Length: 270
Length: 339
Image (cartoon, rainbow over the protein chains, first blue to last red):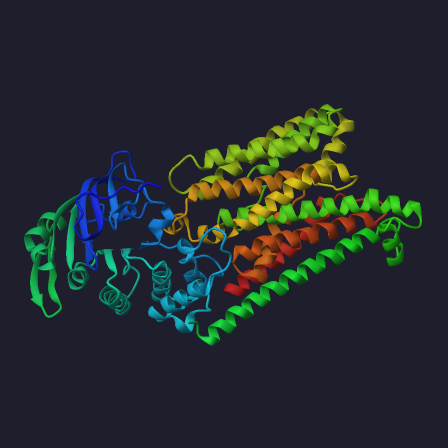
């Protein structure tokens, strides 16, 4: 199989070149460019309907792009086999289908499927070891033989994170991973991601509604407005009261704290 | 590399699934032997073994080799097909109510068979016709269901219900205008029966069933991934639509083969996978072969019950009669189990 190589190669793990697409016939995302360095953490923020989730779905092949290309490790995911892409790219969607009567170990085991040839029936010893390591990483060791449907929201989210980690991805996409979690689990999950980001130089792309979590954890923030990129950069430069009033239509104060720049919303702009 | 405790657990799990498989195969063999020895004339074990080796009483030999063995094999093929097609469809649609009836496959077969039977003189074409009808109806349902880009599962079920209702109403009309003496034959077929099934049907349909079962087992791992939902399956590197079409085609082939042999035998495809899940959990690598084995066992057993009385019952009546209370019991057990 021919794989196209990105001509303008710098050291980027994920390179999005002028991608367009969306659910309707008039694509929400039109000609978007984004570039991620290996081991970095990018957060996509923006108001509802600005196309944050759509971008993740375009990258992870859930929606087929109308034009443009996505390069993963220098190779176009459109010309690569889906299986080869799945060995490098994992996605944790906002809503998960919880299969009935599936244990955590079985669920996480499914994350090995991109690495299995079609004729392989059982998980190999190596697969089992990876599954076990991922379950330990998300601290679900005690729950590995429990059914996923019996777990709490936070535990479920971690079980699905272990599923994504079992793919041994280079890039992990997460769509609003903190939505249904209380503040304790939110921090716990993001700390875990930070650890993976630093220890294994896992490249992370998150869609986050919570601006203060985005500024606190990510290296760079991309602000989206109506399907196009408004601004991108380190939290300090991007998160300004001008941007907040222009994109989010709120009056807000931005202050420096010991966990980085934080937003204090004051009032909506009518 | 693996912790010894974990290694032990994995070995234990594999041992468990192997022993369940062996137990199910033995149960099926015993059921077949029982079905071959019982009936209007019952054989002792010595009668059975000598007739099996083509020795002793020639009447017994004829009964065994020309009547019972092909009928038992037909029962195994039909039961295995129904069980596995139900299990595949339930997995594919992530809906535990799915079977070949919900998806319109059976109504396609039913319509063609009713047309042929009510015209008369075309009896010989019923198996082939039912098969073609089932495949056409399932293709129609899949093409409607897979037209859109999103939410394929729900669309498939809705398309199946719509097509089922449509074909069913035509079938009723045909039945209303049929000659009275033909109606009985049509009804018999609609309820499902193995009466008079011989080597010819086995030879005709058997190869398809064997191939479809082998393919189903080979692709069962994909069902496990599909169970995560279309989006996650895509992310796991699967071509979701392609796999759905492939598995759907296998399930249709199985359902059509069963229908062409025995008519519309209900409840096996619906109930058997439910029972099997209690044994196998949600791993389709186990659910599919177990469903085939249990389905075969159930159908051969039900057919034996049909033959025991003075009047022969259609097997579909027995499976429905026994199936519905068992189904209610399974629903009760499940709801209690998850509560």
